[in-house]
Amino acid sequence: MKRISLLLALLLAAPAFAADAPVPALNSGDTAWMLTSTLLVILMTIPGLALFYGGLARSKNMLSVLVQVFVIFALVTLLWAIYGYSLTFSGEGNFFGGLDKLFLKGVTPETFGGLPTIPEYVFLAFQGTFAAITVALTVGAFAERARFAAVLLFAVLWFTLSYVPIAHMVWGGGLLAKDGALDFAGGTVVHINAGMAGLVGAYMVGKRIGFGREAMAPHSLTLTMVGASLLWVGWFGFNAGSAGAANGQAGLAFVTTVLATAAATLSWSAAEALHKGKASMLGAASGAVAGLVAVTPAAGFVGPMGAIVIGAVAGVVCLWGVGGLKRMLKVDDAFDVFGVHGVGGIIGAILTGVFAAPALGGTQGADFAMAHQVWVQTKSVLMTVVWSGIAAFIAFKIADLVFGLRVSEEDERQGLDIASHGETAYVR
Figure 1: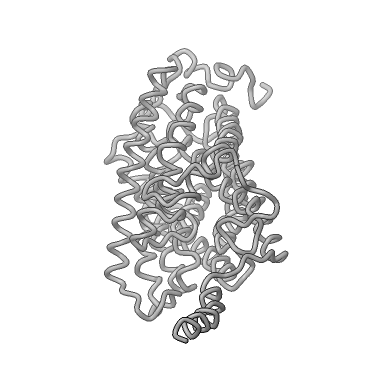
Figure 2 (figure 1 turned 45 degrees about the vertical axis):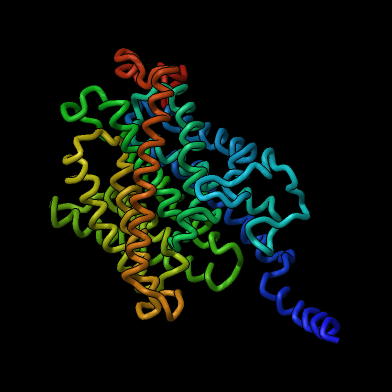
């Protein structure tokens, strides 16, 4: 009788156990939104990031920047399918995932992975765009003097040694996820990660010839403005898409992205006007990117007013990042990758721990402990800085040994468009 009673109890409890885990079921609305978000992130990279960086380059290096972003996007997309997705989103290791899905083994139109309402193919495509843009972001720091082959080898190595493990640690159930770090759409995984790699690259490749003595003004701020605008538009897929569904959290992330970016644009412009006497177009565009970066880890966790504060702080601090901090570091970070993405990512990651509090409009539960979360966020920042910095040093060192990091002085003076690619951006 006792055995029968136990069996009946287990049978009655079975539905309750099953209800704890959502049963995967295709939702066409979620799938359509995630496909759209994936396209928007591609728009951010090609042409958004490419044009933003291309406009900041001198005309003789315009195409070299475009082709680096374009080819890196293609390269990392393939690496993601071959092993990156598996090492990030399968397995339960602290630093790396497993090889269960190497070469996309077992992934079919019918499988679900990562999210319960969209096909696994859509999830892996969306996540692959994050990997590609993160690696592409780094090239702005050492633009106009790096050898193309070395850049591509660095991309392969750093993607493997830094992007994949940090993405696994934060989003794949690894060490930082277990610690409770909050990163909605990539403050640590994307921006601090790329910013630190760019900083290391700028030091290792060295300063451009004439840096600090010759004028190195952007050749087309018009193109930079177009690129910044495409980044802002595409970022809605980046942030709101990270909700993983067409739901209220996606709506919140959409609104916080608008507000933080607007606040950063205005705060950067106001601070620049006070400091230099004039507010520039480049400053407004850079402020917008700083706001986008800073709100990325927070977008789905903070309320609208918290997002405004995060954006306003990021605009002012990132202005210092591309000015005073850059001079202190004595580095030729050509397009201010660390000053905007690194610094903005750090600000956003830490302030997420503040404004995620329900008392400040955040979405976390009533048991949320702000001081503890800020400490967890700070640890995730430090972990990312150290890991990415070491991985970048190794990757650049290997690339230097194999190809040499830098083009010759003659090629650098001629411009990389002709020297490395045999073509020019403009007919003279």
